[in-house]
Image (cartoon, rainbow, N blue to C red; front, side, top):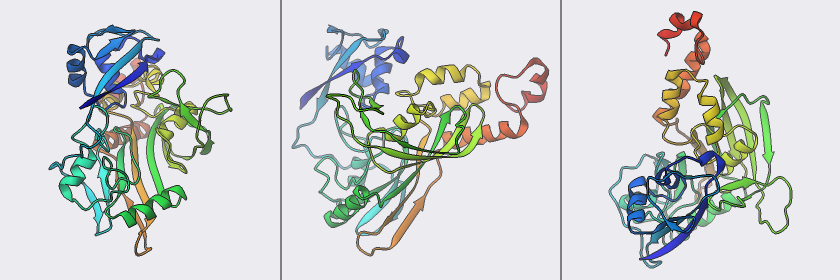
Length: 347
């Protein structure tokens, strides 16, 4: 085993968080219990001093984490984890990844990933993506649920990867965002690069900046339904940059509900005005309300057009149903005294 040193800067919206909560919310695939073990073994520092798992952070603090990483020769292990498979043949499979599952092994996470589950299901996975990512054609963030296409042969991997590069593989996401999106349709064509101070975060970079590397990124956003203090949108990414949809929506002033990395400040403001029943359902999300609901592509061997769709996870579906009921009854937000009895049973 070796170690990888990761450096993070605490943002203004993250001030006051416990150290273990702060690290667990970043995309490092570390749980709070794992962070506690790392602090006890003096592998976590705040401003160059050994840190405690429960210490409170201030904006601008530098957090450094020495994360154990498996050797490059260590292959992911097969694990008996149930998969929600919508389609499978000898060339590929389409799987519904649950929220909270990391796609492939990386720093701090050697097991419990989608790759471990896939290897437990079949050893026939494409090697083209590398030894730690067999079969993985495209990825989803840990806390984003939904459909992924996995290649079982190198020929299938090559063709599906070409479709991704040529923007022929179509992906549609459902996202519940904060605020009322006024325009019915928005095309966000804004490059994305790493945040200047926090390398694990991404940022929209609308204008060229000397010495800053960015990549083009485009997302088509369409409003589906305007709800209480939130809007349900469909997002269609033309490119596949890290955190692209989350970054673009936050850049538009409408971060994804439940997004702890890009939407925490807006969430604190909006949640203060929510009815208790709505607030409880928001807190039950367990991550961002972002779901890859459909994927369409041509079969890499037969050329047949294939399209698959799947509904959002239970917590997101329950929040949507609750918001739609609120809109129908008019019992949204903190009730006025005169409305209390009428809305009491709706919460």
